[in-house]
Image 1 (cartoon, one colour):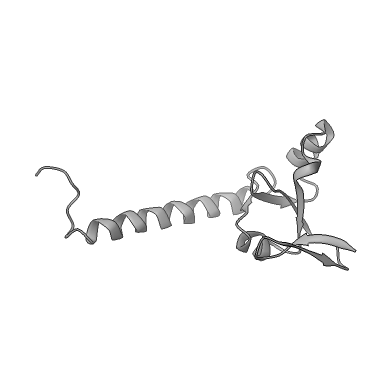
Image 2 (cartoon, rainbow, N blue to C red):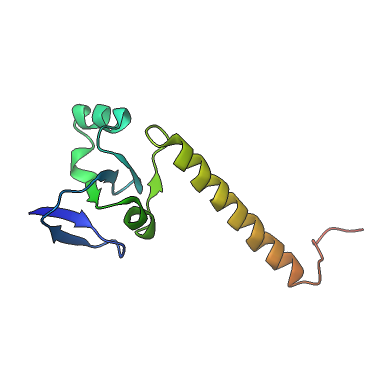
Length: 105
């Protein structure tokens, strides 16, 4: 049996090994052969925080982000969508105040 992390962020037992690995404290996930993760594991400081996911959708739902090293395109898309969401929240806050920005005209 394998221990994977579910969409709710909690561990569960699975008969199927995880397809993606992650780092609990860093809240990131990537390929099992990620060079950055393998280097960290070799140094010994990573294995205690290692988690596994069945798929990418589960990792994202659990609040983890893609690795910039082994999943660069997914990482860029994730960061762009995060930046767009933040801009939308700022825009919504401005419209809640009648479009005022707090600056003098």
